[in-house]
Length: 449
Image (tube, rainbow, N blue to C red; front, side, top):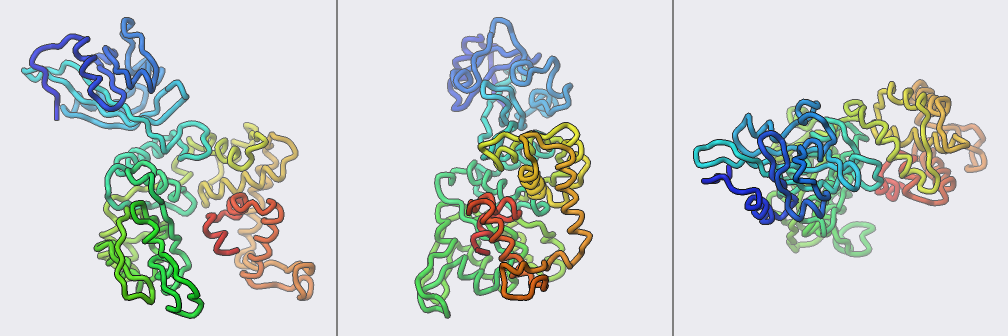
C-alpha cells in the first residue's frame, strides 16, 4: 500500500519516521537525492553527507547515472512506472565490500496523489556474496541475481521449494541458502540423496526403523524425517525416488505423519520441504514414472539454478572462490591466458567440473601461478577419458592391490574402491578434499566408504 502524506513534512519529521523501521532505511527524492537516513542505515552501511545531497546511485553503486541507465533494474524508476511499491535485488558498495542487498521502495504521495518522496528499505542478503567468500553462494551475474532474488523471497515463507537445474550447478548450496534465510535456520537442515536408493533403503533412511524389523536391523534407527522436525528436509534428486515409495512420500508431505519400518506407532514431524532434480519431472509425469499428485505437492515454488554456461560472468569470481576452498594455506592464481582457456570451455559438469579441474591444476602446478599449459593438461584428461567411451568405466587393476594377474580388467565397484583409496591416501584422509576431488558430495563419499 502507498503511504499518504496530507501535508509535505519537514526533512526532520521524515527522518524521525525512518527510525520506526526495523531495517536500514533512507528517504529519497524523486530526482534520486538522499534526504534522510535512519540510525540502522548508519550502523549497517555508514553515514551519508546529507548537506551535499548525494544521489542514491552514487552512494550505493558508485555510478554517475541512475541504475536503469547503467544497465541494472532501478526500483525508483519501477515505482514511478507501476505506481506502487517495488522490490529488487542489488549489489551495493558497503564498508565490507560488495554485498547483495534486498531493496524495497515505497512511494509517498500527498493528499492529491502527487508523488513526493520514496522510502527505500535495505536488507542485506547474508546467504550470498558478490566477492570471494568460501562459505556462501557466490555470484554477481544477472542470471545469478535473478535466482538469488527468488531465494530471498521464498526463504521467509513456508512454501515447498523445487530446485531445477543441471547436475553440478549448485542446487545443494541453494537449498542451504533457502534454509539459512528462513525462520527455521536455527534448526537442522537434513538431507537425503535419493539417487541409487532401493525401496527398502529409501523407506528406512526417511522414516527410520525399529530393531528386528528386517535382517540387519540390530538397533532402532531414527529416520531423517524425525531429525528434520522444526527444520528443513532436503530431498536431493527427487526424480530418482522409487515409484512405489512416492505414495508414502506424498502422505508424509500432506499429513506430516509417518510410521518407522516395523513399527505400529504413528509419528509426526513439522518440517519445511525442499526438493531438487536435474530431470524433467513434467516429462516423467507424462511417462508415468512420477506421480502427478506428488509433482504438484512439491512444485509450489520452483527455482531454476542456472548452469555455469549461463553465468559466464561469474567465472573469475567462482575460480577465486574455489581455489580458496581447495587450498587454504597457499594462495593460487590463474594467468590471463589460462583464464581465457576456461572461458572458452563449455563445462558440461558445471561448477562441480570446474572444481575438479582446479583441483587437478593445484596438484600439477609447482608454483602458486597456474599456467595455460596446466589448465590445458587438466582439460585433456577429460577429453582422453571421454574418447574411451564405456571402457573408461573399467580400469586395469594394479598387481599391488589385488591377487589377480597384473593388467586384468576389473568391475566398476572394485575400480571405484581403489580410486577412493588412492584419493584418501593422497589427501591424508581429508574426506572433504576427497569428495571435492571425486566430484561427489560428502554424504555420498561416506556411503561409498
